[in-house]
Length: 185
Figure (spheres, rainbow, N blue to C red):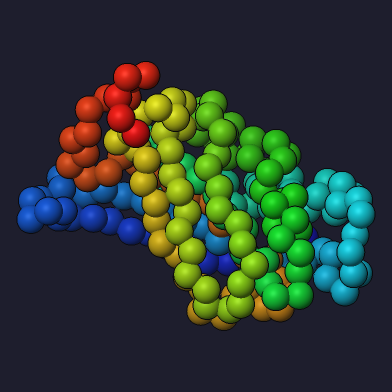
């Protein structure tokens, strides 16, 4: 794994809808900008060896940073991969859609649900929204939220930006009814 840079972002919401949020709603995002392990190889049929070589270490690197940055128990999480212009969308998907990556965060947070994800191909400075859902029950609607992220100089054409996000709570002042099979989406 060849990391060019890492970024940690902490967002705290102190007021929402004109009302105080106490304690502040806290979200942490850890980002790694890595060299695309398949850059310059053209179409790669078998991504497995590259995934095996990068995903576990990348998952550990990001999980450690995002858990430490949140600094309190996590209730919601998500992930992202943004592939630079010379990459294949499957390069980012391959790295984040493997248990060798995701389980590093699940183990650190006692999570059991699938990590919601976003992936796309984009140039440096692209804005992307990481979707978040509850770590043990994806039907808890108060935790369906997203966090917007942007790294000004990443990803470069031969890079992949990979991120993990954690929230210590659901949306501030969430007040939708609990999910039931008869409720409207």
